[in-house]
Length: 359
Ligand code: AHG
Ligand code: MN
Ligand code: MN
Image 1: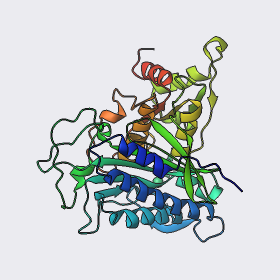
Image 2 (image 1 turned 180 degrees about the vertical axis):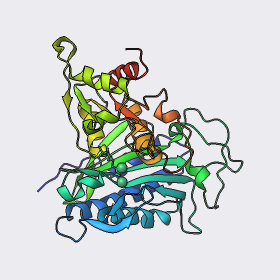
Image 3 (image 1 turned 30 degrees about the vertical axis):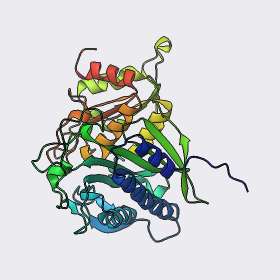
């Protein structure tokens, strides 16, 4: 059957590269290798019901959570492929306590933080899950942070510590210094959504060809929406301002578009992706449910920061709800948790007014 020759993701990446004469092609190579890992994980996820990859691996990760077999498969798939891609100097994964070194002699100038499989609790019940990734440039020899967004606010000539293994310091950089961020969602179809600072674009996998085709160019999140996405089972653990805000969304006020509809899948990638397309606000606020997790459940480096970069590039906003923008947080440790309130700009601004007591 004749298939229209759509824009493939590799062509899109090459077009992006051509927009930057100084580009060496390393970021393109990195993204293309990551996409091969994503296709491998997608094939396994789609076979999960048949292959022996459902259920627990019997192990527990640094988060103190039981590791699903598919978590482990996805983690290994990305680690092994990216360790010798030649574009990275160091990695960090939700499933690994410490930084992950790259193969000696293959050190490159970027770093990778990733959540190999997000939404693990949904694996065995066939609900959408995903992979989230975040890419920074490594720090320069003298430890200075490199550029901010690519080509927008280059602070000074940057000399990556060529050929040397990276360290946690190369990973612990603010979200606004990300060079690229994205996610793959394994749902009714497998989609790749990512940004390199020139807008957000979505690609859908044609499994019969094994190729990602551009299906959602220039994604913009609606400025306001009628969906809120939060685990209301935690209501009793929230502070009063958070409770007031959610109760406000549920009041009848047709003129002002209330009540909102509630949508909560329990996979961050799926909840976020729905809001990116239809508009909406996702909240995983701080709560007093677990004294060990006063800042909520989600992690900064490989969940909140990459999605914050994407949502800002799509015209939305991402905050903590206690006065901080996600993209401005200086990370202190690899698995640092942060409250996350992310989505349509109008809704985030309104939530912020409740959470800091102005409304
Ligand atoms: P992960 O599977 O990578 O640990 O992430 C799970 C996260 C996120 O996907 C989702 O938003 C959140 O857990 C759901 O948490 P609750 O079940 O507490 O609502
Ligand atoms: Mn996750
Ligand atoms: Mn995960």
